[in-house]
Image (cartoon, rainbow, N blue to C red; front, side, top):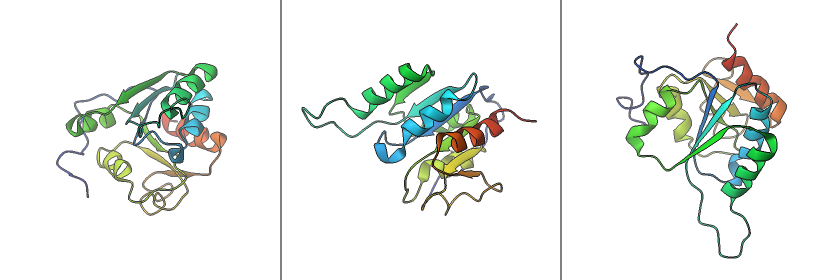
Length: 162
């Protein structure tokens, strides 16, 4: 469950134009490369990732974050890795974001999605188990199929009102 006294809209904060946020573990199951490819198709997008990755076993090659940093450079997108933030800082980050995106392959109980919804941040999620249990398409958010084009289209629809 989420704390509705903490995760609520804050009218004193301005949503940053083009700000896309992801909150969660930096892990391949979250399909962040898909989010990066989608972001590359959106003019003036500004991507923020909140979360850390599991430790990389010694000699296992580049970490997932290093792979994501390389992909961001290749795609020419602006990405900020916030790492782990204190839970009390999350509502402000979510209230300053224009859209929360969860492109995962699967989710159990997507707490970050529910927290984003609590702050009134528009949400886009992949049409997969866990996310479809929380988001209702075009009612409480947008559900997309697992392509960069579909994800980009949904995010862009929220970022460019009218």
